[in-house]
Amino acid sequence: MTVKLRLAELTSGEAKTRLANRPTILLPMGSLEDQGPHAPMGDYLLADAIALRIAERAVALGADALVAPVLPFGGEDYFGTVPGGIALSHATLLAVIREMLARLLAHGLDRILIVNGHGGNVHAIHEATMALKHADGTLVPSLYIWRNLYAAWPKLAGADTAGRMGHGADPVWSVALALFPELCRPDMMPDPVPPGSIQGLTVSGLGAARFEEIELGLPIEYDLAAPNGVLAGDPRAGDAALGARAVAWLAEQGARLIVHLRGQG
Image 1 (cartoon, rainbow, N blue to C red):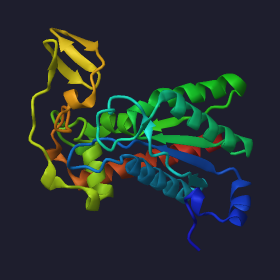
Image 2: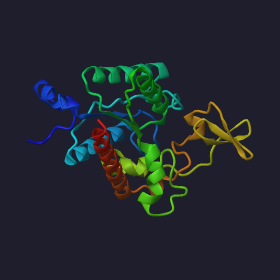
Image 3: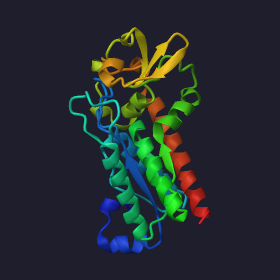
Image 4: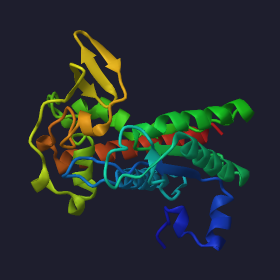
């Protein structure tokens, strides 16, 4: 019988047996936002799929793991102007994370790995996990998918990545092509456009603009920073094979982390 990897797919009878052995519980989180007119809005789909592959590889390495249902709505940040985007306030997201963790811990499931796919979730995750550490020393690590893939992209791509990485471009775009090609619309990729400006300052990112040689934080939302859905990168460089290599690399790293942490207690 195939080993079930999703917590939601266990029967209650299976759960009593499986959870008694303290498997690692992966909590995937993402967002519902504009990823460009060519990519699916639900980047939580990518976090969920990557978490599943981490669990699958961990089980193959002898460390039991289960993926909890994905949290699809990210923290409210720069995407309030996106039609169809659904975001949670910081207070709501923080409360949801705290209560998810508290319920798992109440059942003795203290091996937890948060698999995060959205920058707007980072602060709430940090605040929730820091509170647990201060309360009783419980450590809950979080794996921020895109921060790690941004750092690893030059190695994974095996080429100069200048100009190809950014919002609406790699690494999200290549990963989406690899995991959900049927949801992608390469035919809708926009042409590059120059960044916008505000009060004579050039927009340099989500919530940021430049003045001469310095960068400033400003309350700049997505419609100004990336009016065509793409910021800084060029999605024409996206490649499904590269995305597949990235997913496999991250799944291996995540699985080995699970094995390591299980060895710590």
